[in-house]
Amino acid sequence: MGSSGGGNRWGEGEPKREGEDMAFKCPEVVPLWEAKWPKRALQIKYEEGPREFRRGFQMDPMSDDERKLPHFEQAVEAGRGTTVEMLLRGDNRIPRFMGVDPGGDRRPGSALKILGLGMDGSRIPLAVKYGQWGPREFAEEAVRFYLQWMPWTVYVENDGLQKSYRELMAMLPGAPTMPLKGFLTSNKKTDPDIGIEGMDAEFIQGKWRIPSGEFYHHEVGCRCDWCRWRAEMMNYPNYPTSDGLMATWFAWHALRKGEGSQCGDPLSVDGMTTTGGVGEEELEEENDDFSLDSDLESWDI
Image (cartoon, one colour):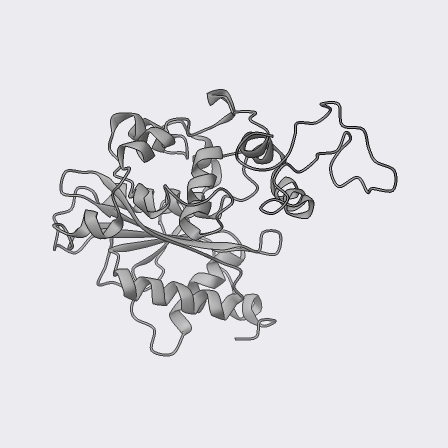
């Protein structure tokens, strides 16, 4: 491995020592920095994402062909040294938009994301939060995040249990009237213009102001929410998780819908305003009914 701290590349003349378990695929790795990256820690990193491990610890860089957002680091570099506090210092009342990616049975992680819309049209990541939350805890975290940032619109993935998560947020005692909207991913995810890769065109255009000071000098292997978000964005689809990336994509769509509105005016999205009810659907896409009781009956809420 390289200076980032792990060990040598597979098969560089290190024979397997008798009695050692094979933590990695043969031939095994020999840690070069035992105090910082012992064998078990390296094994965990490998299991989390083999391709990311090879990039970060074995100097095997990813090509742009492997990434769906190859220009994300260009946007990160442009924002080097800036922080959320700095970006909001003279523009604290900019419109904010929230993306929510709830977990499910097959993918337990959840993520919350806030994007701001600068007066110059720039997209400004303001906050990200990850968690392994149960249904009620997730709803409480989402409401708390909403109250902290007061976004104009909240886009929530609208698929299966996610619809019930959305309703659960509205059921919490004392919950505010949130401008929730279900967002159906369907085939949008791979669309070159409005899909995940559509954000990359804006990275090239310099439309994103990323507060890179929130994570730029963190140590290799940092597990803070900002570093995880950066890793998901930079390495998609080769990173083991994508919760924060998906929440960012939802928030980006909410921002694009509200981009033409004037700051201070109620945001109208397909007939729904921020003064309307909770969780109204995208009428052109979502018209199926679901039973809240049947979806929630097994939950401890």
